Image (tube, rainbow, N blue to C red):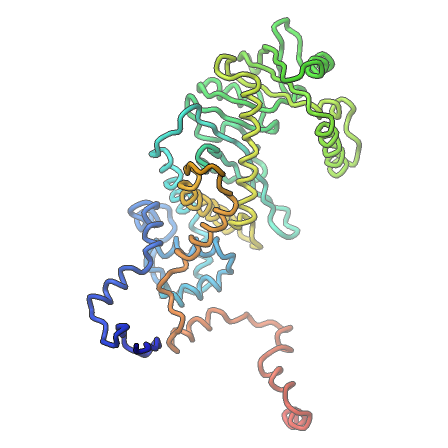
Length: 457
C-alpha cells in the first residue's frame, strides 16, 4: 500500500493515492469543530446582538463575531493563559488577529455579556424534568482573594442542586456584601439548606413567607428562638445538652423564631456527637480561634461544639429528625463543588489592577463550571451500582471542553506568514534583566575564548 506523506504544501490525497474530491474535502471541513458546535447550542441564539446590547462591543474591527470573543474568553479561563498567549492562539487557529492590549480592552467590557450567557445556560435546567421528591437547594459562598498586597477580595454566592449535581444560580459581589440564604431564586416547595453562617432570622423568615422550606445549623446565641413556655432557648444550654446526652439519637423541641414583629413555628433538633468527633470539633475550634483572635474560645462555645443543632420548618409528618439530619449532611456537596472549581476549573483570581478583568475571569470560570455540569449530567443519572467519581468526571470533561474550545482545525504546521504573526504576539516586553540572557549573549558565550575576545573587540 502506498504511504501518504502529509505536508502543508501537498495536495489532499486519498489513501489510495488519488486526489481528494471537492465533496470529500467539504465533508471533512463540515466535521471539524463538531464539539464546539454542540457547545454552541447551549448559548443564546443571537450572540452578536446580545454582545452589542451588553456593550461588550461597539465596533467589531479585528474581532469577527461574538462567538469568537466567547471562545477566546473560555480558552482564557480553561488554560490559565495570559492575554498575549490567548491572542497568539487566536492568530494560530485563524480566529482573529488581535493584540493583547486590544483583547484586554475587549475582555474588560464583557462582564454583562458573560453574565447573560451564564444566566441562559443555568436557566436551561428549568426545562429538564424535575426529580421526584423535594427539590434540594444548597446555599453557600466562597471568598476569593486577589494576589498581592492589594487586600481586595470577592465573594461568590452559589446555589447547588445535589440531586442533579449542577449549579443553579451564581452571584459575584465584593466582600462588603454579606452572605444570605435568600440570594438564590428559590420557589415555593424548594428546600434550602445552609450552614450556620447564613442562619439569620430576617432571611429565614423571608424564605418562609415565600413558602420555601429550610434547614440551617443554628447558633442559638445569634437567633431569637423561644420555646412554647416563653423561654429563650439560648439560655437553656444545660437542659438541651443533657437531653441530647441521655438520648441515643436526635431529640427535638417545638420552638418559635421571631424577628421584627414576625414569628414562625420551627423545630429544633439536637444531636450529641460521638466522643472522638466532639473532641476533634473542639480542637478545630480552638485552633481557628487562636489563629484569628489569638485567644482561647469560651467554655460554653467549646461545650456546644460537641453537638449538632438544626432549625427547620419541615413538619414532622414530612421529615423525621433523622431525615432532617441526613438531608443536612448533603450540604457538604456544595463545599466539594467549590473545591472542584478551584482545583480543576481554575476558579481563582489573577494578578491584575483591573476589577473589571477580575470579575470577568471569575464569571468565565463559573460558565465553564456550568458547561462541565451539563456534560456530567448523563453520568450522574446513570443507574450503575457503584456511583461514579464526580471529581474524575469533572477532570475528564474539563479536558474535553478544552479540546473543543481550542479547535480541532488549528494547524500543526504554520505558513511562514502566520508563524511570524504568532511570534509577534509572543514576544516578551523589553526588560533590563533579559539583556544578560538574550540570544546574542548566549551565542557569544558558546564560542571559544579567542572568538569571544574578537567579538568583544
